[in-house]
Image 1: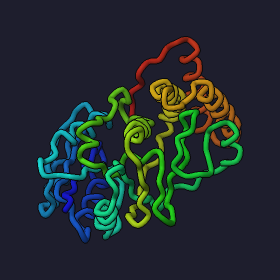
Image 2: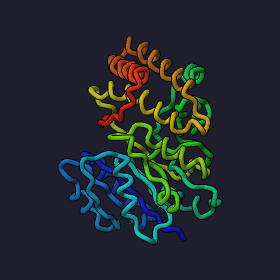
Image 3: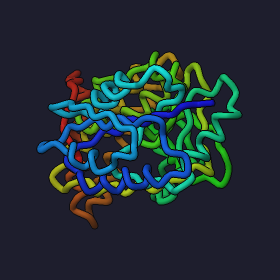
Image 4: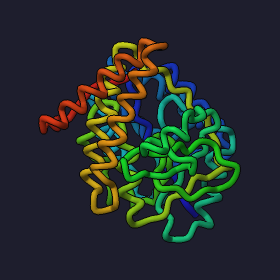
Length: 303
């Protein structure tokens, strides 16, 4: 019988964390361990203490960074844990989500290394036909394209094998998290850090989106003053990902085409929405950095 743990990185969102922990406490099958990794200022340990019925370990990581917090959480796993996952602090699990996820793992073949919860309120992709021409998207869910872009996972009607998993709604075999740490080059919010991690694991294991294990993700919008950073990350972090996995079929040429197309599209969208202008400026700044050979690690937080 599996014993399951979840690592929950958090930063400055006590109300979201409280709502998430309440959904965990209401599960038909409560996890065997939670590890809350706090990068908040001030700390949110008092929120954790409001749920004594949960078997929770509290870890402090400051200054915060999502990849670093996830790695620190996995270091705190108890020896008897056989499955370990990551939950974002702004998700709400449906009451039987953990039970349904464990039902998948009870029958999963050994070649499956990771599985994701189905996010019921994931935004629907738009302009997919146009974006697919430039390697920005694909109609098949859960693909990692040669450009380094990915297609949306979303909520699927049945279990779906995929090539990447959303970082804050996943469960992995213990052997996977023991062997594969998150790449801490992805600093701060860590844009594409989950694609990097899951695609890396997918080189050896199969990955599944479990349709019946459902949750909602209430992610706050990107702050207006962080749109430029997001745009820059969309180029810089993706080019890092593509160079890292070139041997796995990712293509710097395709990544360049996708980056230029994305910058152009965001520039067009900016005619109607100011926030796209700042994002487009970030795209063009990232492209300029690449042309100059400036491939610096970019930190920061989007929300």
